[in-house]
Structure formats: C-alpha cells, structure tokens
Amino acid sequence: MSLSELPPLDCHAHIAPDVTGPQIARLNGALVFAMTRTPGEARAAARRSDPTLAWGFGAHPGLPDAISRVNAPMLREVVEAHVVIGEIGLDRRGPDGPQREALEAILDACRGRAVVLSLHSSGRTRQTLDVLRQHPHPGVVLHWFNGTPDEISEAVELGCYFSVNNAMTDARLLQIPPGRMLPETDFPSSRKTTLASKPGDTRPLEERLARRAGRQVTAIRHDFYRALANLLAASGARSRMPEGFREALDAAGF
Image (cartoon, rainbow, N blue to C red; front, side, top):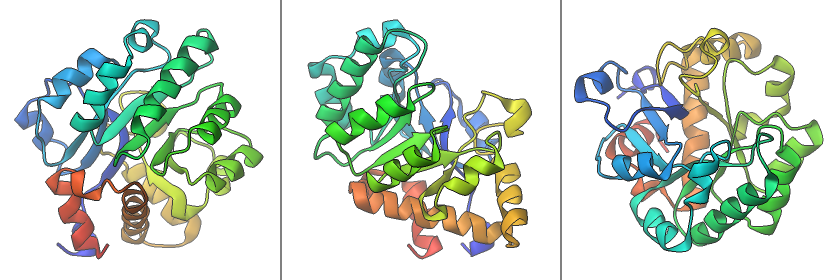
C-alpha cells in the first residue's frame, strides 16, 4: 500500500450496529471509529468483528436514559469488549450531576486500560477539562471541541487529541496543533457543513487543510495517520485495534 493508497480515516462517526457487509463496502475501505450512543447499541456492536470499524461503547451525555444505565459491573465488561469508548462526555442539555457521575465512572474504569476515549463536550468544555484533570487518561480524543484558546492549550497539556471536521471554523482549526489533529465526519450530523456524504468521507476536510497549508492531500492524510499512531502508542491500544487499522499504520510507516 503506497502513501496515496492509504484509506480515509474517520475518528468519529455514527454507524448502526446492524450495518451490512455491502453497506460497509460502500465506505470504500475507510477506517472508522464507529461510535454508539447507548449501552444497548454498544452491546450489539460488541458482537461484531469488522476489520475497518472500531466499534465504541457509548453513553451519550445528551441521552439521560443512556447515562443512567452506566454502572461499575457493566464498565468492567466494556473495557474488555471495546477498544474505543465513545461517545461519552458532558453536554449543556441536561443536569450536570448525572452526566459527570457517569463520565467519572467511565474514566475510573478506563484507568490503566488500553482504550481510546472519544469525548463530547458541547457547552461544557471547561467542566470536561476539569474532570479530565482529576481523572487523566493517555488516550483521550476531544470530539468537535469548541473550547477557548486557553482551554485548547490546557487540553494539549493534558495529552488530549482533537477530532476535527469541515464544519469547524478556520480560526478554531488554527488553534489546534497539527500533531494532535485527527479527522472526523460526525456523520450523520451537520452534513451541509461537514460536506460528508457518508462515514469516512473526510476528503472535504483534507482538501481544505491542504489548501490552507499549501500541501498535498496525501501529506495531510499521512499526518493524520501519524497522529493516530502516536495516540495509540500513548494509550497502548494499537494491538487491540481491528486489523485494517494496524495494516494501514504499518503501510504508512508508523
């Protein structure tokens, strides 16, 4: 596999756990962190074994029923069944207390475990960083993070990575260190602004970043793989990733 043949990488998208083989084939080999929103979805996803999809365990903070189902016995099984924990986090919609309790329980269960976390922080970026400072983890990806420049700097100091999409402003993207940047579509959300037609369709983002930097799209994608390799090395999760991810990282030279 040459540099130009590296498959698209999408570090935050939503795919139904009953997706079929032909539907996956239509993603053109894209490697996707497939987030779930509820423990029920996650249980169904955990039964799958897809070489190009890393299925997450999700308890979306905007869904009260989902976070109410988070408990210690469940989480002990979750960290064994999933290499990706997401979508989890905090959200301005709904009371902070139950969301924070669920997030802290998840972070405690992930302590010392080889997992990558994808955190939602809409409207509660400051509170999310406060929780991460108290419960650090070496494999955190902040999904669509819209914090202040100071909060972005603090997140970098905490070792966080950022999954970014084409709906984010140039000003925001310029604040994020390129070495900590991973691509996402958050499909099916905000398709008019992300311009993503399906999970893994990160080409509009890559082309935009390439134009801004005066570089080739292939170089931007290679940078994304470098960031992914560093994230997986920090978290110890590389060996747990599906085969397609490991093969692509080897092909990219990481």
